[in-house]
Length: 100
Image (cartoon, rainbow, N blue to C red; front, top):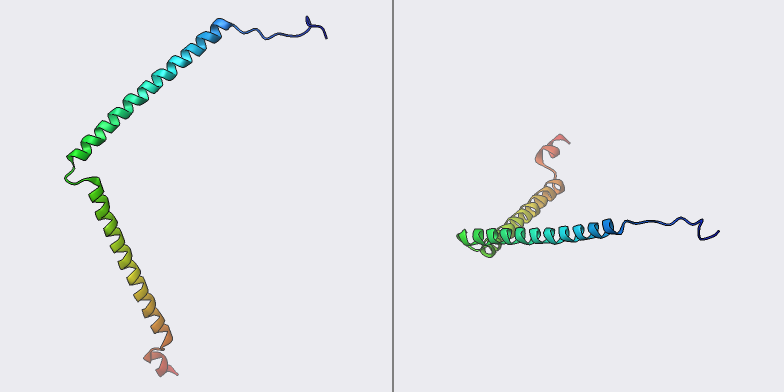
């Protein structure tokens, strides 16, 4: 095969460079938009925290203590219920004895 028979890819360099420049400008604008959005959200979150009567850490500690207390109460109730079931099945009731 000779060199004249080979097909060459022809790229419009001006269009390629223009596209690369537009993509770069778009990426920079997108990053600037993301930064502006982040600053706005962080500012709003800080203002919301300042308006609260108690800091979020105090609220989180109180909620955690409530959850632990509820879990302990639930576990205790579960254990008591299981013990009651075990004693009921281990000893037959008076009604069962009278039928025999």
